[in-house]
Length: 441
Image (cartoon, rainbow, N blue to C red):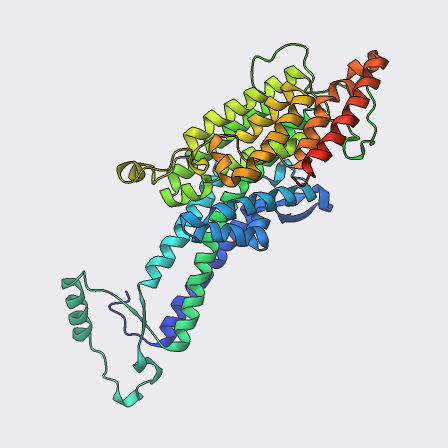
């Protein structure tokens, strides 16, 4: 059509208007997918969490940099993204209807991304600024088009199908055209960013459910400083027998991750797939340790079940997080041995649970040794494969959990002497932890 119809700026304006109309419809379709009716906001309609984060703000800027920056510059950005997401979701907890990624929605957002990218790239090929377009010819100077001239023009176009076709633009129309194409690209990026963030929001939501259990205590947020034992509460992580299977919510999370990965593998390219899945193991590792503060009380069997959860997640992630450059790296220069960024594992989660099973005294020894190791070797200590050191807040939660079975569970209610002994031991351990973590040596 562009090759056979005489051009003027009115025709160009009509084309741009049609593109804008199509963009508005796609934008409305996207909004319909990622909005929800929120009981928290008195039934008002608002964006789901991932879509809200993908629109603007610190999380959006960090995710955009992850998408645009080269691979070797992403390590710090991944750490920043983890911190921001955990902080924001801690300030306003996620709800089930905050999660976008049911299979149909993942496919819809993937198709929207592909459509917008394809349309923008093909329209960009039509762009050509012509200086003569700014000067309109005089009416009397125009040749009267005749049927045979149109047929001749069309015939010559048909005979040279490979000849490129352009949309002549003056400078003013070129600015409007470029703005329209940028809007298409922005919508595509927003859909991709929403997918990237949503899988992580889903992880936080499911891990929080795993730690709190199906019937969390109602006073969890206003828990007194001095814990009291309660034989009536059914603590989810205090198990009588050794576990034989992973937690139901972890199995559900695994199924969600598999379904999500299957859909984005089918409808997105390798670069987009890697953008969404890279750094996911590190995110889950950090989110797992962070969410342990919701446990409340746990015994050895409860920790063994969480170890199963970590193993199940880790094995599943190895089938999802596949570096597209891995084959090239093997053919050329291999990666340095022990590079933690290339290993799909959950080392901090495993370490947290191992230390819990060894008890509070051993935990304090491990924490001291780990601090000295990283002080002496820095990031080289990561080659051991145990992840980054546990922070003071994480160790405080760990020490608290070591005594939680007695201080909050039924054991303390049944035996007053055990409760008082555990209370004193807990206070001593926390005091020693302060000495270790704040020692300037």
